[in-house]
Image (cartoon, rainbow, N blue to C red; front, side, top):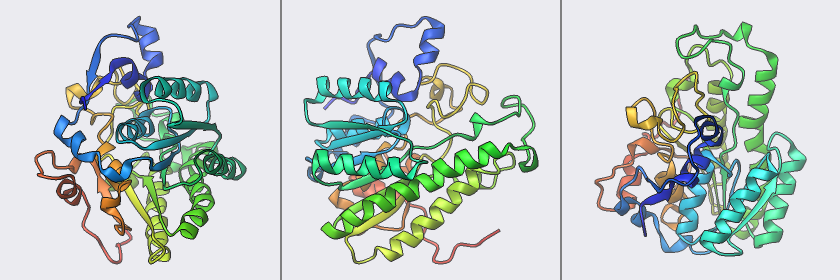
Amino acid sequence: MTSSFDRAQFLRAAGAVTVLAATGQSMAQGAYPSSWPAETLRQLRHPSLKDRVVLITGGSRGFGWFIAEELLLGGAKVALTGRGQAALDKVAADIEVRHGKGRCLTVAGDVSRQPDCARMVEATLRGFGRIDVLVNNAGRSPQDFTRSGGAGGRPVPFYETPDEALHTIVDTNLKGVWYMSKAAAPHMVKRGFGKIISVSTSASNMVRAGNPIYGPAKAALEAMTRVWAQELKGSGVDANIVLPGGAADTSFISQDVAPGAVGERARNGRLLPGDVIVPPAVWLCTDATNGVTGVRAVGRNWDKSASSADEAFRKCLDPHVEVPQIM
């Protein structure tokens, strides 16, 4: 298997279509190399990924698309959700050309709406017959509501933050995970197998000034996942957290924070590569991690020099704290 992505695919995944339009760059300029060595990607191709059904929210770009792409290369089937039908249609058409028919289905919907979440789960069950893995990736960025004036501006305190930001971010990043997981979990428990993987953020970002909603919402997500891991123990269903380990080069990070073409900003070292989250996310989808639950896997800590994916995965896990300290 090659270790490179088509440049157009990479930039679309990173959310760079608007950047390309503004700069006049072509959408077909050769290959964009993956940030991961070919050996790392080879190790991720676990036999259990063959025909594994993975439902990924926010799957038409960014982390969701990168995870989906690697899962497809490993033989999995993916159900991708997003708020934009047009973007999903383009992704589905691309996947059909490169991976064949019957490997992908798409469902437009908003995870902040409980009826949409139930419909997306049901559509996946109708299309593929089961859900083996749910990846809660969809999220809203605090930069959608910032008034700080860019990277050099002052942080906006909570008392100046619009209530719209509270509702939108909490509804998507926390309640959306609740709705999706609550809809999918009963099917997993009934089958005696399943994996719920939710995308979080760095601990420092949870308590950073100027980030009064996004960070605390992710902290609540992690606490919620720890509770689920305990409640699901013995059911065959695992619940885990995966995160990049820093700001990564996708459209989630605005030009105010890190200017430059999306998909290329990791080159100067300011951002992590856009696909930094892929190895631990994909490995958590495999049978190699069955029974691993309540863990926190950090993408940037994946050991490229490890002799096996399992060894690399173990090294990217944060130490388990039985009772986390508050404040």
